[in-house]
Length: 243
Image (cartoon, rainbow, N blue to C red; front, side, top):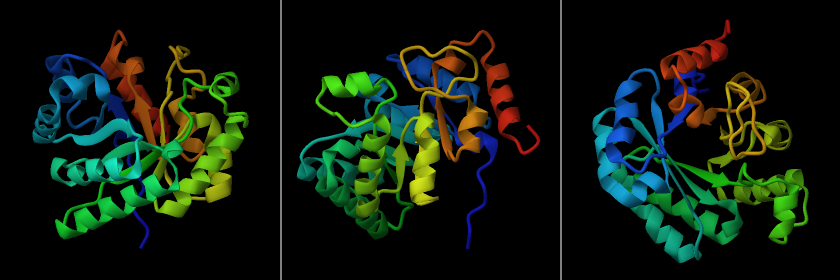
C-alpha cells in the first residue's frame, strides 16, 4: 500500500539553530500548525540537551535531531539506541562512518523501536555537506567529484538499510536516477530567494521538490526574514499542486 504524498507543510523542516532555548521555543510556538518538523542541531542541543526535545514534543513538534553521529560503530550504536526514548522523528549520521557503523545503527534502531512498539525514527546518512565543493573535498584527501562521492556513499548506505540521505539539491537528479525512491531525501541549502550564506550548493524549494526531494531544511531564509510568516506562506504556496 503506497503512502499518502506529503503535504507542503509536512515537507518543511525549520532549523532552529539558536543557543538560547527561549528563542528556539519561540519559533516552534510561532509556527505551530504551519510547520510540523523542527531541526535541533548541536548549537541548541549541547546547551539544553534532552530538555529542548521534551519541550518541543510537548508543543506538538516533530523532531529532527541533526548531530551527525560519526564514531566507531559500537559507540554510535549505543548512542542511537537512546533515541527511541526521545520521540525523535529522524536523525543524522555521517555516511563516511562506513558500512559497519551504518549497518549497526540501522539494525539497532529498528530492534529497539520494535521492542518498545514505537515508530522507528528515520535514519539519515549525510553524504557531502553543502559547505563542500570539489576543491574543499580535495583539501581533505577526497579526489572524487562531488557527484561520484555522493553516489559512492549512497551506495554504501543503501546496502545497510539506512532510510534516507541528506544531500544537496544539486545531487537530487542523479541520486533519484540511480536509486529511484529507495531513500527519503532531506535537502539542506534551500533558499527561497537569492541569499546563499555559507552554503555553496543551494536550490529553491520548488526546484528541490520537482527533482525528488521529500523534506526541505530551511533556517535563516525564514528566521532572518523581515516577514517570516510571509516567507513560509510563499513556500507552502509554491509546493502546493497548483503552485
